[in-house]
Amino acid sequence: MDVLSDVLRVVRLTGAVLFDVHARPPWAVQSPASPALSAAMPGSERVLAFHFLLEGEAWAQVIEREGTPPLRVAAGEAVIVTGGREHVISSEPGMRTAPRFDLYRRREDQRLPYALTAGGGAGPEARLSCGFIGCDARPFNPVLEALPPLLVVRPNDELVRMAIAESEAPTPGGETILARLSELLFLQAIRQHLAALPGDATGWLSGLRDRHVGRALALMHGQPARRWTLDALAQEVGLSRSVFAERFAALVGLPPMQYLATWRLQRAAWLMEVQGLGIAQAAAEVGYESEAAFNRAFRKRLGMPPGEWRRARAAATLVSRAL
Image (cartoon, rainbow, N blue to C red; front, side, top):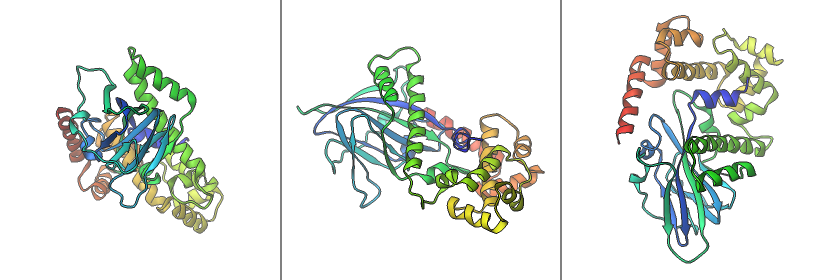
């Protein structure tokens, strides 16, 4: 079981490229925090922004985190704002401007990406492909907590060339290609971050690369409905019960059985919303012996029963699409 792929599928990772930006210094592009971006990605609980610098150079900074220094972004690099926070991309560090909320409303009569200009000086031009990654945050998304608030990565050359080609000469299906490229960019960012983690790092991603904990995660994701116990998991990964429990909690941040229970709820939510399963069937698919037990666990985690949650999600999606 590829655990990372399973998580990204079940949290409904979806990409979109909205803007092709041409800018000359001095320039700044400021993006609002995730809740204000709901019109850009209807139905997504969390919206992460990314800025792919195709030409020139820029500086990126998260505004809402005091003391966070700006990061330099070079041509061919992408910056991903993983926490969904307000942030700014600019020609010089420390610049600010007012975000334009109207830009994030999807206009059905226009093809993506929208062409924008910024600045207007006589300096060297910078070009950015800017978009968003939408995903679920609840009941459980372990990826969101595993990444820093601002992440600068260098995609492979082929990804860069494809992004430039689709932005310069839009073709039928180009919006879909750019959306898939943005999802690949996010996956590549996670993999680069994982590869750069120090050996003593903790967190869900560190758990993935640990031989014993990674094996346990693969088993839980591969067979979520199985009646796992702490003893059974420890035996499968070749550790004693106590050593396994301590190692898993130290790396992942949750005890093994609590992680499994929370992931089951996320998978059940996906089965109900995306696959269209009924509540009882979704509960059975993830290992609950009764619908009542599932309802109690779901309510405890999200503050409402699954039926009410599903209706609220559908209503929120309709509202965001109407904005």
